[in-house]
Image 1 (cartoon, rainbow, N blue to C red):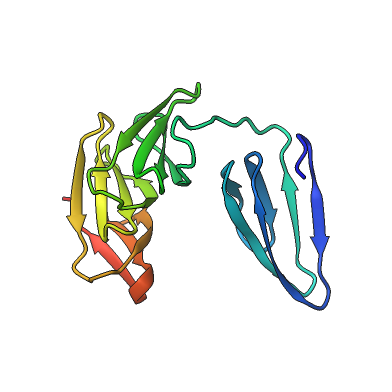
Image 2: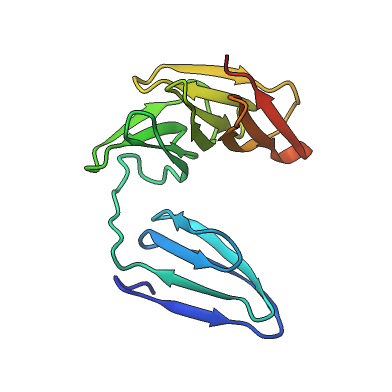
Length: 186
């Protein structure tokens, strides 16, 4: 039961537990186990595995939420874009979204059917790059909404995390096959 200004601290001494719950609003997790993470409203999340005296806190004061136009779209990754907006993926909505700092949301359907876009990163080339978890591909979207798709040669790799590397390329994880991939962007 989350209130507008809810805070909970859990301290475990001799056991390991995994906490799941359905979000009724966005929540920021502050943890000594992981960096800060914003959990999205309307979806079920695994908070963390807590062991031997670990502590975590949930804070909701000062958080503003912005409902997405597509219900149950399951937002995944989010990143600051080169255009001054925030860009995010909608895993079950099969879309990439853009939200202005004022909260105006635009959604762009990913051309690959049921690809489940998840991770997203901005590149200095002015585009956004994202993983297509079930599409087995890396996608690129321009700030104007044009898409390109790059297939991954490893079958059923399930790309997940993605980041812009210091070498100017895009690096990503292949969850299902325990690999790290790189796509050159030149």
